[in-house]
Image 1 (cartoon, rainbow, N blue to C red):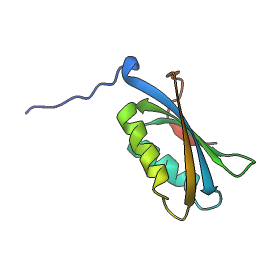
Image 2: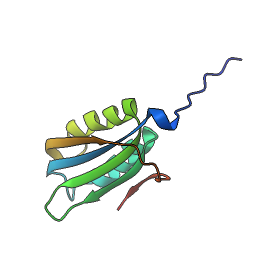
Image 3: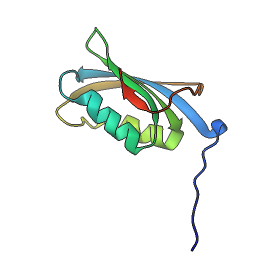
Image 4: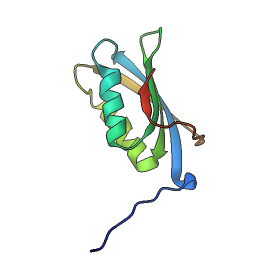
Length: 101
C-alpha cells in the first residue's frame, strides 16, 4: 500500500490577519469560522471587536489560508459579509489549535 504524506515545514507556513466587515456578529460567524479553520488544519483565533468587525488571525499553508479567505468572502451561514481586509505577515507559530476568543 502506498501512502502520501503531506508534511508542511515552517518555511511553507504563512500567517494572515483578516478583518471581516458586515453583519458578522451574533450570527454564528465565529463558530462557523472555527469549524472551517479546523477543517483546513489551520491554527489561530477568531474574535469579535467592539467596532462590529470580526478579526481572524490564522496560520498554516498558504493554500489553506486562501481557502479560508474565499470562504469568508462567500457569506457563510447567516452572515452578510461586505468586505474582507487581508494582511499577510510573517509566520510566527505559537498557536496549538484554532479558537474563539
